[in-house]
Length: 186
Ligand code: SF4
Ligand code: SF4
Image 1: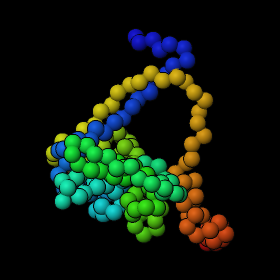
Image 2: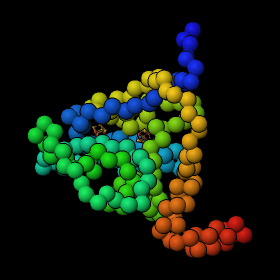
Image 3: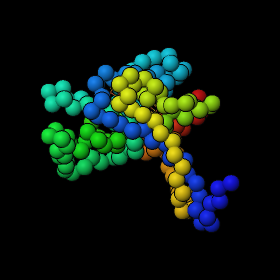
Image 4: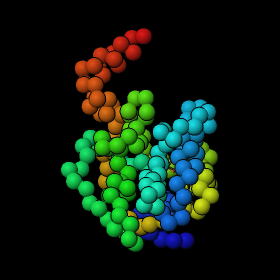
């Protein structure tokens, strides 16, 4: 039996390793993600709804899959440019934010933010759908355990709160509250 020292706890870390040199920009990962998250499941394909997007610049042989992370109201005031093995990448090529500077990770109809949930499901998938869809092995899934210090539970925003915040930013609090009131009466 493994004994965990007092004050430490085991945490399961889920990772998707991305090999940009293997990615061909086929975008199968986007299709698979959008199908898995369609309601009902697999009822539609729409890469614009995917929680993974591939930054593609064919002229510079750049293909970088990025998964949707946190929603942010403001874009960065500047950009870093990285040169890796002779190729120039904007930091946005690696950034997972749902940000006003681009259309990624927003519901196309409503503009509401999308976030990767590692394909949580019941029963759990053996591997996330984007990894299963990638025929080039550009995406590989790894699970490992890490010992971390026990901390007080963080106050985390629920998905509903993030969506509410985005709606208020877009339409104003009064309009959102009026709509909720109207819907709750109908
Ligand atoms: S892990 Fe699942 S939710 Fe996240 S990008 Fe891949 S397919 Fe989409
Ligand atoms: S499925 Fe694989 S090769 Fe195709 S775009 Fe996605 S990561 Fe790249």
